[in-house]
Image (cartoon, rainbow, N blue to C red; front, side):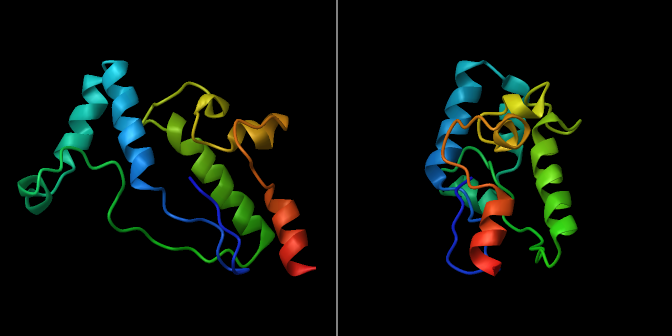
Length: 126
């Protein structure tokens, strides 16, 4: 998930379609038929008629404005826990999910550039 820092109330940007294609490709390579089936079943009929094969992202979501540090931490923990949730079970440990910043928050190691929420808050709200 790409992060942007244009406004103090904007932290997360929606993933690009390229990431969705990458996710489907990895699932196909790993022969994860069960999860691919879930993604296929998520395509609405109107999109299926246009040739869409998989629905990787929800089309709607609830935006939550993070007004307090505790709420921000709660949301980060929720996001990091999603790949290991009973619904998805993508990895056994949240730090192993390639598209998550959990590895950085737990160990300080980066797979890609991550700005810690504390650094972002300090930079934007000092």
